[in-house]
Amino acid sequence: MRRFFNVLSLLVVAFAISGAPGTAVAAERTIMALGDSLTAGYGLGPGEAFPDQLERALRDSGRDIAVTNAGVSGDTSAGGKGRFAWLIGSGELPDVVIVELGANDGLRAIDPTSTRANLADIIRQAQAAGAVVLLTGMYAPPNLGAEYTEAFNFVYPSLAEEYDVVFYPFFLEGVAGDPSLNQPDGIHPTAEGIGIIVENIWPAVIEALERVE
Image (cartoon, rainbow, N blue to C red; front, side, top):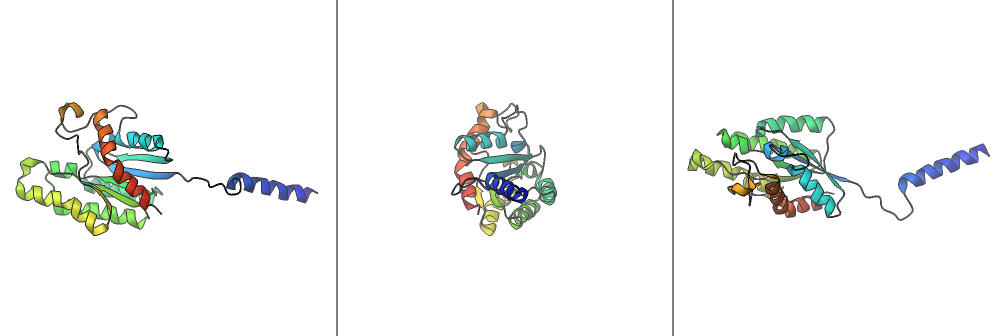
């Protein structure tokens, strides 16, 4: 009799874990937003950063998805590459990685060849870990000359084509240059500006999620 109850208990536990017959248990997807201050939420309040607003929009649309904020203010593509290697090595394996890096490379006039190599390494690491990559582009500051601007701006579309990643050409689309959507420094978006970024990048995020196996 005791053996009967032990077997029964195991069956009850198994049923509780697996759910009722024919009922699918929805697995939560995860997105890692790897970036600089534009991702980290420089100058914004709690819940106003890009990852926070994106997660809220996804959940409001009925999608059970968590978005982690892996943004560090001032980070370059080289810094992001080092951090990403550590995150992956520590067991952080998201379904989608949004790569928003390079703005500080442009501001510091870093050689676009180095920026490209760093971003390519991040993409390769992410894909090797089984993640879908959404690469967001950035434009070089106009004061660095036509040659630098052309080389820098070409980095992102060329990477997107080479590695077949989801591509959003300009992270600050619809926000850059609008004083009403940026903080006094003219560089970092306000909470409202971030909301517009989330709205504009939405189709690319959905496309990335649809690529997850």
